[in-house]
Image 1 (tube, rainbow, N blue to C red):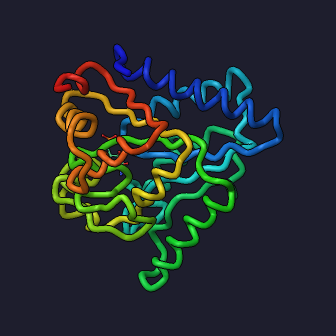
Image 2: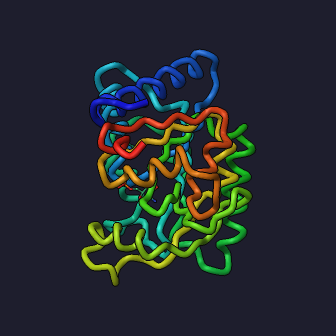
Length: 244
Ligand code: GLP
C-alpha cells in the first residue's frame, strides 16, 4: 500500500492496532504486540499515545515484545532501545511494566543463549504475536537479522553489518561508539506473527524495498523471507516506492 506520507500510513497502522486492542479487551483477552524501534514507527507510537489520551484507549491488556537491542547496552543509556521505547511510548500509556519485554543488553554473555530461548518461549506461551511492526534497514535487515540470516533463525546474538553501524552513527555520534553486536528476534520468530506491518519511508529505502518485494527470496536480503508470510502488509510512501 502506497501512502501520500508517513502520517497517513502511521495512522492506518495505529488504527488497526487500536481496533484489535478494543476487540480483545471486550473478549477479556490480551493483545500481544511485536514492536520495533528506529525512526520509522515513531508516528505510530505518537498516534497510539494520542488515542490513549483523547479516546481512552487502554493498554492494560497489552503485552509487548520488542524485536531487538544493541549488545552490550545499559538500559539507561541514551542509545538503548529500552530508553527509546520508554521515551516514545511506554512512559505515556497505562501499560503494566511487567508486560513490557525488550531484549536485555545487560545480560552476561554466558547467559545470552538461555535468555534468548526464554524470550521465545514467553511469546509462544502467550499464543504468539498478534501484530508485528517492522522497519527495514538498508542491508535488508528486519530486526537485526543481517544478510546471511536464514529463515530458520531464532532469537540470538548477532554481529551488525558495516552499513547498519554506519546508519546508526547518527545516534551514537561516531561510528566507533556503535556496538558491534545486538540481540534480535530471528526470522523464524518474526514469521510466526499472525499479522506483520512493515513500514518504510523515504528515498533511502527505495532500493531495498524493490529488492524485498520483487527480488528472489534470499538470505542476502533477509526481508525477502516476508514474501513467504501470508499476512504481511507493506506500508510505504511514494519515495520508498520509487524503484518498484
Ligand atoms: C535499526 C533497527 C531496525 C529498524 C532499522 C531502520 O537497525 N534495529 O528494527 O527497522 O533500524 O531504522 P529507521 O526506521 O530509523 O530507518
